[in-house]
Amino acid sequence: MKHIQKKYYQEHKNVALEKISYPILDPSDSIDIVEASKEDQLFLIYNDNSIVRAFAHQHKDKILRIPIPDLSIVYFNSAYLLNKLRIEQFDEMVSKVSIDGDKMDENATNEIFKFYGYSSSCLISLFTALESFINHILPDNEVYVYKKKKYNKGEIQRWIPFNDKVKYVLPFYFGKTFFTNATPLYEHIDNLKSIRDELIHTKSDQNLKLQEKLMSKIIDFDYEKAFEASTDFMNFYKKEFIVECHCGRDF
Image (cartoon, rainbow, N blue to C red):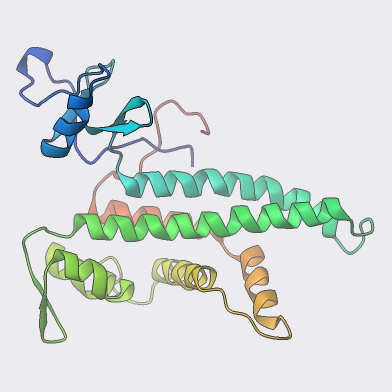
């Protein structure tokens, strides 16, 4: 997969400037812009005349114009870039730690640290993209009955487990389910959730067997299938949500 199209929560394309009725974020360095951003929904005009929701933020002596990206896309894009680094780093690591290679030294240790960092961050970002996506597409003003109790959107996000969201909540709201049974796609997303949970809540034991097991999982995990399953899942509920950028470049 090439890198994906960047998207925003609120975005308007091909709108004639004279028809714009949105409050536009003026680029001038004025504290009034920051205050206005707190009170109103402001938009930013790009040089291609696309309009995106934005806000102004004062950082020290600078006024920053920040477009609000779709965070699910941000997390997925981050996972994609980290996966590229992971792939490159894997070969470097293998060349240093292979049993028939040179003696272990500081260089080998550096490769292991980098590989584990890229891999774990990739998996965490990819699963976070799924969580962010699910929470965002939940209807704002509709309740869901879960275990005989009513939940609004905020409560669904906070209290209902991920697996129950994908198996019950989304089919309830959208009238269709991505997981009709224990398909390979479900298995890959379930594996992603499982290893992400292990990474976020890393456990320890005295003989280091838990750490050994986790690092082995990191090496053998099927990253490509996890990306494919995550992409298919999000595109199932929001058509063409994850699509390759037209430029054709890797990143």
